[in-house]
Every structure is written in structure tokens, then in C-alpha cells.
Length: 181
Image 1 (cartoon, rainbow, N blue to C red):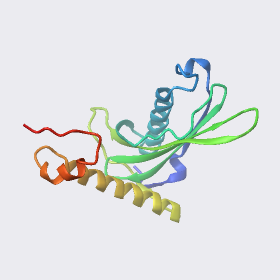
Image 2 (cartoon, rainbow, N blue to C red):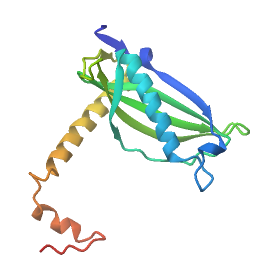
Image 3 (cartoon, helix red, strand yellow):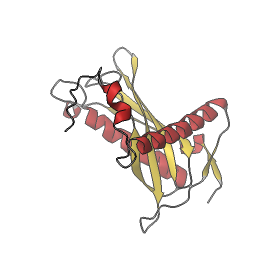
């Protein structure tokens, strides 16, 4: 196994025409279809980097920025942003293009944490990421920070650590009524 691989070595992109079968009741491309494509390309990118079968461990925030129309081309681009010992963060960008006007829209960006597995389903070590530019440092650092923030947030709100009195005042301005027994 190589010790480190560059972002370019694992980068993947796909383009697909959006068909009526991909649409929801509102006539736009269904978000679930886009999520499925995003998961597929994250898998391809992570597997290419690790040379292993990979599974999705988590997806960090999915914001649908612009609707995708039936008849548009959708391009998904994926690259490795961060590597841990057995996991990687794959950045996925989704763009649509109107084939008649050429107008492109950024529709979504998301981050998939993928874990490499061996034949027995056990997590296995992966190559590290060779970072070669400032953009790579920014992406790696952002993913590291996001991972640390998620751990702190999850720990703070874990039921065994949660202190309800800490949050009661903050919830007074929210659209909820608290009636503790």
C-alpha cells in the first residue's frame, strides 16, 4: 500500500442527464435521486483512494441550493479532503447545466465520511493524503475542524452528560412550550 496519495489520483466525476423518471411531484429532480448519486460517487472516490470496498459512515449537512430541472445535465465531482487512519472525508459538489442555454448552477455540496473495509468487514488502514497546495490545506483543515466540532457537539448533548438547566433560558425564545413534570 502506498503511504500517501494525491487528491488528483482519486478525483472522480460523472455527468448524467436528468430524466422524467427522476422527478418528484413538483416536476423537479427528486432530492433522493441526487443523494443516491452523491453516495455512489463518494464510494467511487473513496474506493479509488483506498483500493478497498468502502462504506458510508456519515454525511455532513446536505443543503439543496438550487432545484434541478428534468432535461438538465448534472455533474458530480468528488475528491478526498481528509484522511484518518481508516476513514476519509470525500467532498462532493453537484452542478446542473441547462443544455439549451449553457447556464450552470451550483446545486449542492456535501461531505461524506467513508470507511475502508477488508473482506471480513473490518476497518482497514488507508493511504494518507498528499496535500500539495493551499486549497488542499484549507480542505483538510476544515474537515479536521468539522470532525472535532461534531465530536464536541455529540458529547455535549449525550444523554449521560446533558444538563437541561443550561438550555432552558435559550429555549424561551424558540417556538416551543416547555412543561417539565
